[in-house]
Image (cartoon, rainbow, N blue to C red; front, side, top):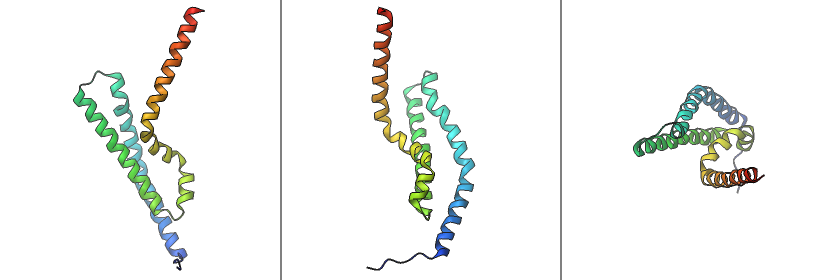
Length: 125
C-alpha cells in the first residue's frame, strides 16, 4: 500500500488554519475559563439548592466540552499532532483533569484522614 505524501502547501495551509483558529479562540476561551471559576467555587461559598447545584454541574460540563472540542479540533488541524500536544501539554492536562475527578475525590479523602491523624498527634503531644 502506498501512502499519499503530503506536499508542503497542505502542511502550510493547515499550519495557517491552526494559527488563525488559535487567534480567534484565544480571548473567548480565556473569558470562558474566567466564567468557569465562579461556577466551580460557588458550591463551596454559598448554600445552593439542588437545582442550582445541578445547573452549575451542567454548566461545568458544557464549558469543559467546549475546551475538549477546541483541543480536538486544533489537534486535528495541526500538521504535526504529536508536537502540538507536547507544546500544549498544559491544555491537555486541563482537559484531562475533569475525567480524573473520581481519583481527586479519593485523594481528598486520603488527605483528610492524614490531617485528622496529624491533629490527633498534636492533641496527644
